[in-house]
Length: 254
Ligand code: URA
Image (cartoon, rainbow, N blue to C red):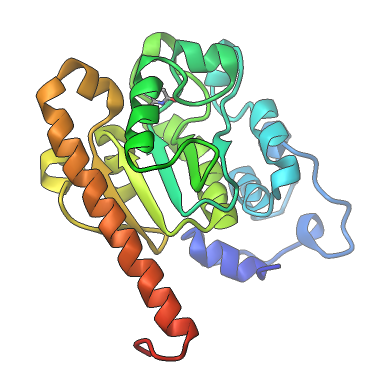
């Protein structure tokens, strides 16, 4: 189990306030969704920080239920089903989209609409499917009404869940699907064209940017570019796996 200070540093939440009742090891565990509780008097620790820490310690057994019970932003009032993610919990590949749409909201599973069918074809072209070596998630776990763009507050509220998924899965490679997912994770405001074709990093994991399948459905000629991106992703992953093997054999770079 990582130390609390390590988690806070990883989340960029240091310097740390001195702990009182809430996080003493002998304290009663806090209930989920303390974001809605009244703050404890004289405890210099925000409910936001408490929530982020709690999510950073979730295991798979509690993850989906926690997402489904989340009320940290207004999307909880309009969603039908939260959409935590789907796939192999030890996947090498993690695909990340923007947010669930109507069909995902009805089913509770990401990328099940028309865009999802194209994503499935892209995975099949790579010899994979959504339950083999692949995990699929979104930055937002709940549908924004009318498929509007996520607000910065919604993103900040939801990102700890994606970060926890990454920590649990430990993917070798992340593929950001579309500008929204890419610019959110890379914390840049730029075009997708300027992000494609090279390897970025998110939380230390190599990340490759490609077009969102919904965009590709409207811009069929760009499918060739998306295939180039996936080939770059595959080559990058092969290089990583090769390096891992050499490292394990004691012949890799130190
Ligand atoms: N678009 C996304 O970004 N995610 C989904 O799950 C569906 C459509």
